[in-house]
Length: 399
Image 1 (cartoon, rainbow, N blue to C red):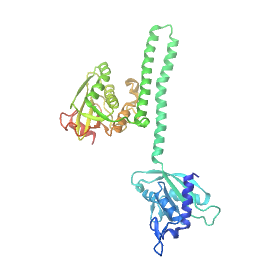
Image 2 (image 1 turned 90 degrees about the horizontal axis):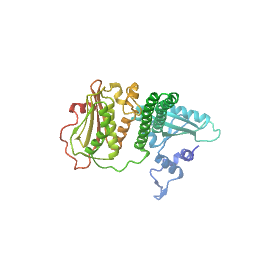
Image 3 (image 1 turned 120 degrees about the vertical axis):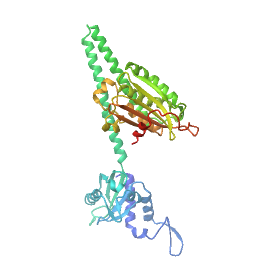
């Protein structure tokens, strides 16, 4: 038994034994019959401490009636009057009453909590030691572990995905090295295999770099101080980084929108986010078409929109495109060279800046990704000027 639970159990035991004393006092100090103020007795102090504790605590009697429930327990909605509403908690109390201390994870229904289902870790322990007959009350100490379990699952999936993604380029490099060794007498084959090695090495380096970026954005390092950043500089740098890849596919990048916008942020992160959006647009566009990027001020935010006329995203996949390692078409991963992390990085950059990212897309028509970053201060330009994308497209993102 942990020291915290041991303390709680000891205090609860004292509280149950002296329950008749507690009800005589209404606050931290009670009033004696002769009008003299006296401190609360030990049992009342115990009850006061239990009420102030963060873990939810419920004491259940031998008839399954609730003897005590602190505010944290009642906030979970598991107690109504003297009834415990969750059958799983009652079952754990029964098991503890007959067999000693018990632990378990119980999922609380959505309708009780009111904010989605919650998972709680429960420690059930008898408050009376020995072989008392009939068995006495049982204390249930509940700790919300929903977020901890979610983070654990995300971390587990992340490790599995990283392992899978790393195996592809590493395996390819191994096979290509063996191929070069076997073709030592064929200079043309050696040159061809060496070129493939360079491609796979670049893919591996990009994956490692993006994993490091994502780790930093997710809290691995503190967020640098937000300072005024010119959106024009961000867009210009992102276009410069992407122009070579666009020319290789005979694509034109068109830069427009409302000039002079200033946001509060980290310039390097914003450049990375816009570059990723542009690279994504280039990768999924066909030749002899355009990729448009521009910004406008709207409702206190700078909206940076990247529009392409590529293959588009199926409706069923749109809500998942910002997940790590998710690709709409896995068969295109090798041809586009994508790692599946670019849009996840964009999402975390937006979140770290107090903004958001949204997507509008139709198969065969293309896609528009809109990054929204808060404008800097009261001196920001008014909401005016030409929109970066047609009005109906931006509205569709939010429908």
